[in-house]
Length: 339
Image (cartoon, rainbow, N blue to C red; front, side):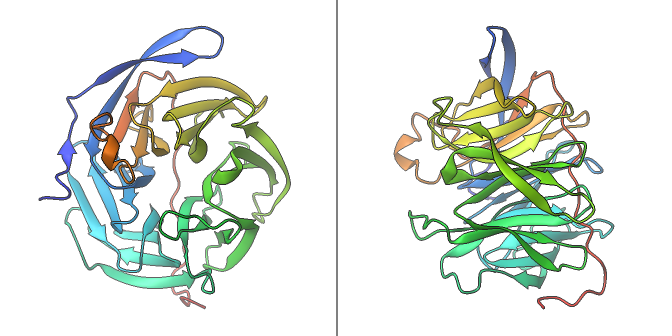
């Protein structure tokens, strides 16, 4: 199996000192466990099977990693860059995937590599936008699937060409925020009344009021500003821990993971990563106390000597916090696809 000469590095450990605002130091361990990949993204921990799912966007692959057996497998989706994937609730071997501008359902036995899985297009978005594709996505507390888009033309990212969408259980699509430039991290608080969202070029984490029954959002305001804290990168993926604090991937800067208190907007902690292009993150492990972090290798060809682990998936141990369960998409049976 020569999947980009993927290395399983469960024994390799990089010990770092983690800076905490306020002056305290906590020793943590950052372990590169899988890689390298071109652009690893979208980690999703399935606590029912102890499986970590993630994607390699431009290779158009969805990966499954069994943390108990170390089994790593993939499937290829033919409709374009694969940016996000989550299991479909109650349907074995079924996943909703953002591929190009198509939201698709794939059928894949994760124990085997599959370069041509069965695929059905659920919905197509941004059909008049030549360079658009899906980007980050996540399932809300009611089981609806949210995913946004972005424009990508070579190394350019045309602004204000994209949107954030919500897909109900019948796959009905609603436009939630438009226009956006690079729709990225999204998560909901534990009270199910607040929605957090990132449009990367704005270098801010936004917060909205959220109605759990309808899925409507309102009253947008800024929670955290990268510029205010002199953080040189851009916010990318985001997750939430069991205490309600946010964790944000700082991409294209010095490679950091940020812990933010959403009640005050304060920066609580900075974890320095051994790579600069940190893309997303998710809590996992049997106790959900491991923070899995994805990263990119694309565009760093001249930096590999200094960043040998660019493009790896990392596991961070010793943070002293646990995560919240990640949810599967509640997609109804017998819906009419692509309407």
